[in-house]
Amino acid sequence: LAAARDGDRAALARLISVIERGGQPARDVGRLTYPLGGRAYTVGVTGAPGAGKSTLTSHLIRSRRGLGSEVSVLAIDPSSPFTGGAILGDRVRMQDHALDRGVFIRSMATRGHLGGLALATPEAVRALDAVGFEWVLIETVGVGQVEVEVAGAADTTVVVVNPGWGDAVQASKAGLLEIADVFVINKADRPGVQEARRDLEHMLDMAGLLNADGATGGGERWRPPIVPAVAARGEGIDDVWAAIDAHRRHLETSGELDRRRQRRMIEELRAIVVARLLEQARMAGRGERFDDLRRRVFERDLDPYAAADEILGWLDPAAAQ
Ligand SMILES: Nc1nc2c(ncn2[C@@H]2O[C@H](COP(=O)(O)OP(=O)(O)OP(=O)(O)O)[C@@H](O)[C@H]2O)c(=O)[nH]1
Ligand SMILES: [Mg+2]
Image 1 (cartoon, rainbow, N blue to C red):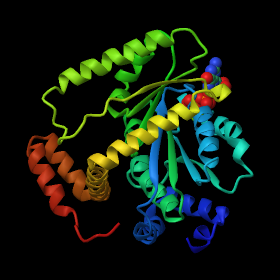
Image 2 (cartoon, helix red, strand yellow; image 1 turned 180 degrees about the vertical axis):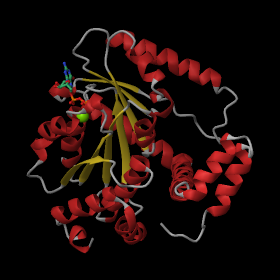
Image 3 (cartoon, helix red, strand yellow; image 1 turned 180 degrees about the horizontal axis):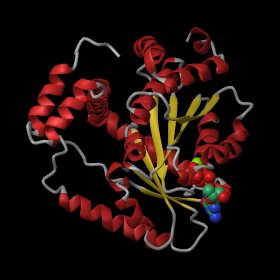
C-alpha cells in the first residue's frame, strides 16, 4: 500500500489482485485503505455488450487528463460467455494510455472474493481512492443483475445505448433505466438517434409519472440528460463530461451525494453480513449432522422452517471468516 501510494503502479496492481482473491489478506487491505479514502468520485459506465463503453471511457480519460486529473478505470468482467473477449478488447482500446502514469486501468473478475463482484468492486475502488485517484470509472456490461448493481453503485451512472429499434426498451428491461443519471446515445453516426432519444424521453416521462408522489427528500428532481456521442471519433465527449459534472453538482448541492453514499454503505454492510452468514451456513451444511437434518425434512419429520432454525443455531457468530 505504501508503494502504491508512492505511485508504484505494479504495487497497486498487486493490491487489487489481493482484493480479487479475497480472504484475510483482502480484509487486511480493506482495513488499511478505508481510513485513507473518501475523496475519489466514481462514475459507472454501463450498457449492452458492444455499445461502445470502452471506446467512450478511453476518450473520457483523455479529456480529464487534459485538465490534469489522475484517472483510474476498473473494467468489470462478469466472466460470462457473452463477453469472453471483453478484457482483450478493453486492453487494445485503452492501450493509448499505457504510457501515461496518471492513468491506471485494470480489469477485474470475481474469483475468491466472498460476495463476488458486488463486494470486491467497492473494495477495489477504495484502494484506488486511497492511493489518490480523483476519478474512478467503473465499466461494466449491463447484462445481469449483479453487473447492473455494480455500475449503479457509483456516484454518477452513465448508461450507454445505441440508436436502433428497441435499444432503449432493452436497456429498460435490463434494469438500466432505474440506475441512469446520464444517458449517452453512442454511435450517433448511425441512423435512429432521434427515435432513440424519443424512446428514452418517453420512458423517463413514464418513470416520472410513476414516482409523481415524489419521495425525493426535497429539492429539484434530477432528470437524466440524453447526450449523443460518436465515441469512435471522439465526438460528444465534452458534452458527456458536462452532463457528469452537472449531475455531480446536483448531488453535492442537494445533499443527495451523502445520502447516496450512506445508502450504499448500508447496502454494502448488509451484503457483507449476508455473504458471511451464507458462508457459515455452507460450512454448517456439510457432514453427518446436516445429512440427518435433510433426511428428517424429507421424511416430514421436521418442517423446513424448524430445520432452518436448527441450522441457524449451529452458526457461530464469533467465527470470523
Ligand atoms: N459506428 C460507431 N462504432 C463505434 C462507436 N463507438 C464504438 N464503436 C465500435 O463499437 C465496437 C465496440 O466498442 P467497445 O468500446 O469495445 O464497446 P464496449 O461496450 O466496451 O464492448 P464490451 O466491453 O465488449 O461490452 C468497436 O468496434 C468500436 O470501434 C461509434 O461512435 N460509432
Ligand atoms: Mg468494453
